[in-house]
Image (tube, rainbow, N blue to C red; front, side):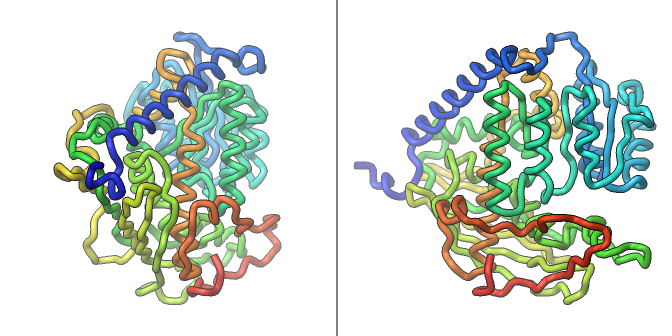
Length: 426
């Protein structure tokens, strides 16, 4: 027996994972072939695709722009946001873009602009073919479920939920999308980055031997905070300053570190079996603008074959740390993108791949379960840190934890906190 059989992921394990991936792909192709029986519109190589943007913040606006940069025979025809000022700013950014072709592809009329918490229903009722979901994480399961029912192809940002209840809702919608032959691509853009794709394929072929251990980091400064304005009520304050509240963003390990955890799962061929974590709030004072989230997490993830990955994520201004992934094998180590050639900007490539999937000029893509598993990997890390307990994958999958308010009302109060302490709950 190989001395590392019980310590690292073997080439045989990788082969099994790859075979499973091909099986899923084959299933997706079959679903796409059957789509004409479900009422899903089919698109040829030259058919115009109509795109709608749901969520007009910086990431949503960026995603819509990247869709237009990468695909010439598409048009942005509808937009929606909770707030008019964000929608207006997004419209101006795209229609005045420096790329002349992007400006040409902007075709949004006033009648196809919608405002409000329920405006997702209006944009999904239009004749768009693709919905770009750039709205906030808390509402993603509900919106994606509605998009599938409306039979739209989907690009969704990550994370795809903030709690296990939302994960199950999202997974069910993703599986229904596959049964309908709808394409679904997620904003885990490293999955579309040539350097990562080629390197991880080589790792699976044994380039550094059997995987023994790894580490993933997202250690940087605070992304943003917004002071409350006198005219904002509680709900507007929460949504405008969304990163600060766990029920909206999921905490930094979920909203941001999910990218690195997704690479970890990709390398390992699936999610971990358990996590033991710590975390806390070191420098953020107890002020409303900093919300109720931690500013650091340290996690020990264990996989079914006994391999451990260390995970570190934090928001500490003025401190080093870095954003990276690293795996160590019996024959060396890799940063997961050091053995591949350079390709198109992955933020653009993911939209090219989505359109190719829809048109049938590339492989059928449905990344829903994959991104949901990576999101739940992050959520279980948060659950472990908040409770001080080891959390298994089964614990997280079966948990009835639901942290999103049942109803949102501009007249209601949405208090902040308390900041979680170990033993107080997940």
